[in-house]
Figure (cartoon, one colour):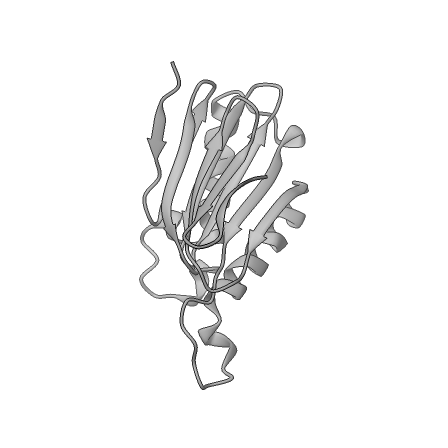
Length: 161
């Protein structure tokens, strides 16, 4: 029987098949989903910010792309995944509010998405699907059976990557 495992904001979880990871309310945050298709180990992180070194209050490593990725990779390997087999899918990174300023610091969703893409390149994990940007929230479900990523958005429907 498949279980639905909730991943909170600034949280990460790893599961083996059968199991479906889900996170709600991705706005500027990014849902990072990694999958090993042979061992069927899946991981999901709901990161809020791109870089832990730019923030003084960085006690929660799951909050940041750079630290969450390292912890999730270690947890996946402990559960039987092989790093060289991993593939990635990401969703979120929206610009939920408009600002009159041209300051790039306010473009958190875009900065989050670029940080995650850069980390995936650094760890040599192919990015198989990317549903980022826009100005709407997303709820995602990641299936450890086949690595399918289901994305639900209000006003934009449901799609599977």
